[in-house]
Each structure stands twice: as C-alpha cells, then as structure tokens.
Image: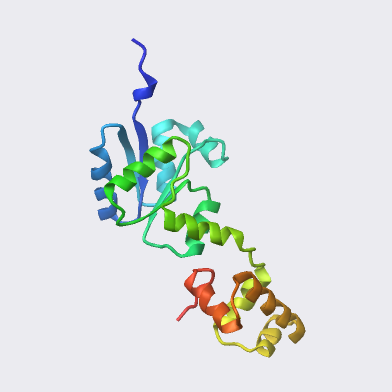
Length: 200
C-alpha cells in the first residue's frame, strides 16, 4: 500500500544552547502523536550538520543557498521589539516566549507547518508597530549610541567628524522616527526596545 501522506508526522529539529531546554522540549514534543523529533542541536552549525545527516549533502547545500523551505519558530526569553523584528527579518514564521504553555507550542508548530505565521497577539501588535516605524540609518544608530552614552552634539560631531548642524539633523530625525519628544527619551526608548545596547 502507498503511504498516506496526510498522516506523515511533522518533522522537528530543536536548536537551543541549553541542554536542559533541549531535553525538555524533545521530551515534550516527542509525546505528540503527529510530531517526529528528528534531532537536536546546540547551535546553528550543529543544526546544519544534523540536517545533512537527515537529508543528505544535496539538501544541506540547497538549504545554505536558500533553496530549501525550512519553517522556523523562535522560542526565546527575549522580547524587545527589535528582537522580534530581527527574528522575522531573518525568516522566522513563529515567535513564542519560553514559558509558553505546551498547548501554545503545539499550536504554533501546527500553524507554521500549515504555511501560516504564529505570533501571539501582544507580540504581533508590537511587531506591527515596529515595522511601521522607519528604519534608522547606520549613521543615526551611531548618533543614537553616542546620545545614550551622554555625549553632547558637539562631542558627537567631533567623534564622527561632522558639523553640529548635521548632528542636530540626525538627532531630530531619530526623535521623529522613534516618535519620542526629546533626545533623552530617544535614548531610553532605544535601549528599552533593544535597538541599541549600552555596555556597562
């Protein structure tokens, strides 16, 4: 008899750098009758090796070249607007926070396997808001990082070898794009949203 393709299990590769999380997810997902956990990996390179072992070198090369459609769900403890946005830009079809109920994880896998996206409502709203804002230019990000470190326009101008007027224009553009009222709020908002990181 020919196999019934409709009953083929959903094949899952779990990638996480924490052994306990890997073991927990593998155990949880293996109990689902329509899931098959084909492997686990602690990082991206190892994940590619596992895929190669599962599917052959041709598949691995096609995956690297972007010709294979692997659907991915991010399960993370990070939830700044920028983390969510970057995950989607990198190709994630789903985004869940660690600690999500098992039912949500299972639902996300079924949804993404069906070719749809899975984003819980609060995350979807923040993603939509982030995508509506214009992206900051590389120069604006430089200026924003210096703002967050407390540099004045004059100090920023000296560091970047640009005029005070140009710095002021960049600051005004940043304030407008982030929809904030001043430079202090711009820096605070950028840090909260994960747009920039300030080293301590």
